[in-house]
Image 1 (cartoon, one colour):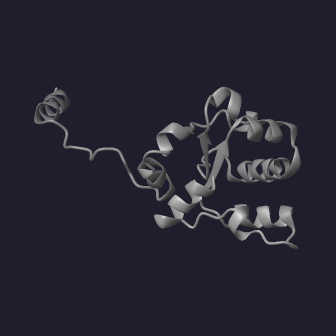
Image 2 (cartoon, one colour):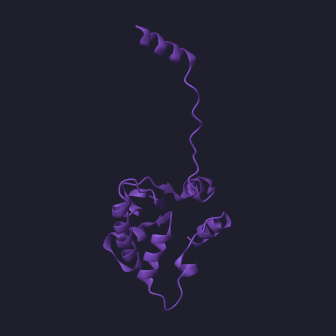
Image 3 (cartoon, rainbow, N blue to C red):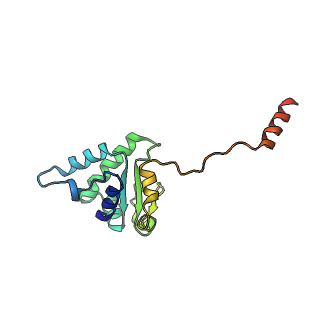
Length: 146
C-alpha cells in the first residue's frame, strides 16, 4: 500500500496514509474521520485480512468501516468517492458492504496506474460521440412528414 501511495503522489495525487501522516499522540478515529471528510476519493485496498476486520468491525479497520458506511449513507446512491482495489479474489477479499461496487483488481493497477489515475482525476475515457448518420436523419425526416 505504501508503494502504491508513493506512485500516486509521484503522479500528483495527495495520497494520505497513516504511515505518512498519523503521528504519536494523535486521536486515531478522529484522524480517520477528518481524512475521510477531506477526501474527494478514497481507495480501499482490500485483501482477506482487511475484509475480515471490516466485516467483524475489528481494530482500526472496524472504526474505518463504521466511518465509511456513515459517509456512504450521507452521500447516497450517486456516491463514487470510494474505489475498491481487490487484492486477489474479489468475493473473498472484499468486505460485505463494498461487494456491490465495481472493483479494480490489483493486477490491473500494479503494472500501470493510468486507469486508476483516470478514476481519481475523473478523466472521461469514453470515445467522443460522433454525428448521427445522414441516412438516420433522412429516415427520421421522412417519418415526420407522413
